[in-house]
Image 1 (spheres, rainbow, N blue to C red):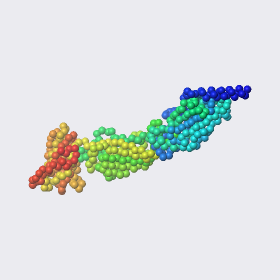
Image 2: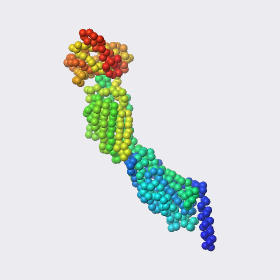
Image 3: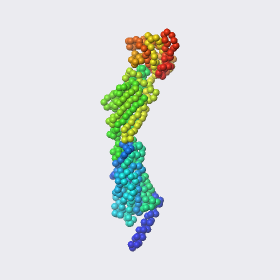
Image 4: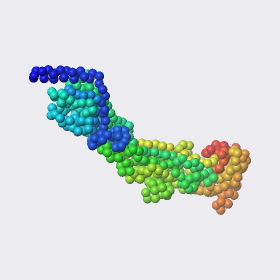
Length: 494
């Protein structure tokens, strides 16, 4: 009888080794520590945790989430088997031991019907290694100790050195491969792979240009004011928008939802090609409006430094947390109402740098504010007492009448005459001539004083679509004509 039993055992073992040259695919999935699937019902619509890249360190990063990878077998296993798990990146956070792999029934209960099913680690499995091979010894009593289709290999682990997740969109996969005995060709179930971790933006950051129409530098006011803005001296260039995505991403524990307002970091904002000529150097004239009242106040973030075309904001984590708001926080520019606002050829460029574990830079164009008419600046305008006589011809080349204004500034920057009407209405194709005496008459009416010393700069602005300014200069005793327009600047100089 004993020999017959041994022979039957040998035949069964031989048959088992020829069962699965054609492999079937099992089912591979992740569950939480309680055994529930990671799915949208449990807060993991992708089937695995997606970590906020803002928290991921590119030099050293451990994930503390307790992973359970469940492999549901497609076929019955009645031979000693080897099971190899491999991470595509990173490694095991801890040294593994045989107890991290358990054999379970379909209902999740442990298979404990025999002490002869033994699990041991035969290769790797140490901290920072990315693979481990388990040997599952079924024993001699095959019918009793077999593992049938539908039963589960439950592998528990944590991931260390997950630095690949510092790049948004990166993934870590876990592969499982089952081999019968020592023969690598005998694989009862196909090798399976699944994503167990990835990273993404835990906060959406946008630089938005103000999309309001009609905002312009008002040439009728000598370019010192705006039209269409919040006030004649205040506009919004755009806003900064910080929002969490939906669904939210996770911190390193894979369970706590990441939110920027509670995990903020320092940052900086630089605006280049800005229209700050009438705002600098007062840093309160360019600010991020935190409380939304369009007035510089305690919670607002003032520029750290300000020049005529650049604003820099150095922000601590409290500042950036204050920006966090789905509706965005406006970037406000205040002009002083006296100095002209530059009409620049390009839109301002905002560069926002955030000091996450891996520094992140976001750029965006802001509102391009241009003049609402035509201008010409002449730089060599003498008074009537000078030895040179000036003649300025202004022609409306458009199809609508408009007002023409002028401002006189001495070469040392002293304001001789603020923006004042030079021509009440200049009809289409009409040309109007101004002399130094005419300018002094207008100056006297506007200021009560008459004349100026030396040369002056004349800013001419009109709410005309097309204007042509032609300035001539000649010595009163005779001599050649000099064309002032060739040295002028603006879109209305001839």
